[in-house]
Length: 274
Ligand code: FBP
Image 1 (spheres, helix red, strand yellow):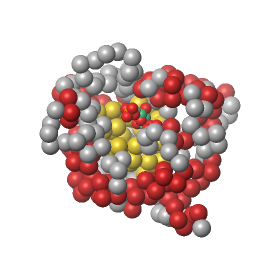
Image 2 (tube, rainbow, N blue to C red):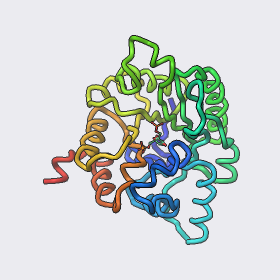
Image 3 (cartoon, rainbow, N blue to C red):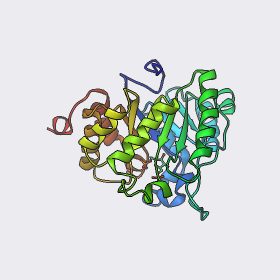
């Protein structure tokens, strides 16, 4: 396992990745609760908060991001993580699959990416194909010396039809997904929150010290969200990759301030609110 603590996407060993690939994954419906979030430049601005150690974008928005930085003389934008695969939920598919839209060479050489992101749907009928594609991505990223974050989301028929598992958020499934990040050579694995600190601990016990970050999920109250993030950190996790819980807020700054102390200073939600 490589040491990536010197990477710009890591601060004090941890990360807060602002994910903004939802226009691909879910479509404009995710912007409806906060219409200004449909404008990428609004979210690029949010990413200038000190707490944010990377902004995760698909190729088109990554190109937009670099242009926006240049046109506006922005020198404190978040480091760029280019998501090299993704899928919409428009087609009816036999099972989950996330095709590549960007090469690692283009991400690094043309977009000056600081990190690469790849979604892995282990458990899908298309798992084998995705493993092969991840191999190419991971080896190319190694040749450029940029870290790879795996969105490790086991899902699909293999999970649904296996009586040993209750679903995607089953701690055993989350732990298996995390372990695959280690086995396949990711530098950080991003996992669904399994519902409790004990569940995240089960993940930590499986990943042999690989960095883990919690996937934000649908929007909830500041209190509930901070508790989940704190449980992740307390169980040994390394931070957060979050989209809707930030860009669906009118003003995300107060929550980002609190997340910064929880993720990078290890404070509890109770301490920061007292
Ligand atoms: P959220 O914090 O909004 O959940 O974003 C994290 C993320 O992984 C995004 O990068 C991605 O678009 C989305 O969740 C995918 O979620 P799902 O595949 O579970 O619908």
